Amino acid sequence: MAPQPLQHRVRDISVRLFRAGAGQPLLFLHGAGGLTPWNAFFEKLSGRYDVLVPEHPGFGTRDNAKEIKNVADLAMYYLDFLDALDTGPAHLVGHSLGGWTAAEVAVRNCSRLASLTLIAPAGIRIKGLPCGDNFIWTHEETVRNLYHDQAFAERILGLTLTEEEADRVLANRFMATRLGWEPRWFNPALERWLHRIKVPTLLIWGADDKLLPSAYAKRWQELVPALAADVIASCGHLPHVEKADMTADKILRFLEGK
Image (tube, rainbow, N blue to C red; front, top):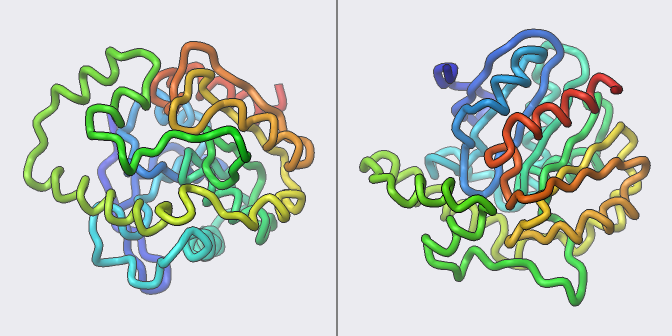
């Protein structure tokens, strides 16, 4: 069962936060689509860790993101978030936009991190290896292109949103556009600084990712010291949803050194 949302304040920014479990903190940063619904992925992780899943400023509501102009600002916000935790170093896990943000956090300061896990991260670009463009895809194209198993897409496309849910989707799209529009989902300077990541790092990618190709995994391996990469077959852009148990198991084995 999903935990109830809390309100979590860091300095003058208040966001929704889902939290469950106990032990060493594990902070999950969501992608551009907004908060990932609590599922088997989070259930497994929260069985061994104190899992924190915040909603990025500007997602869900536009009222708390005045100071967040770009991904660099978002990374600095999460450094403040980590500093405010009354615990030791945290495991940081990020998906897509959240993976990009997590990498930007790590190149700035690893002192609050125990490890880093990147799931299909945005953030870099390889000339001649184009990414999908979710800003020009229709809603149906976007949903279908996120999954290898179209049963997931069919379930989402069959949903009818409430007025509140539709407002959140609109806010998410507005903030995602602010963060990822130009240049599309990457920071030209990030590659130069990925060598600064000094914590154990795991990279997970779906082999059939149509938004951010899994071929990018090789470049991340070249740039991040001691990065371990794992590509999941028959999986799209959201391994933590489409292959929730498998992805959680891979992260748990990584964190426990098995």
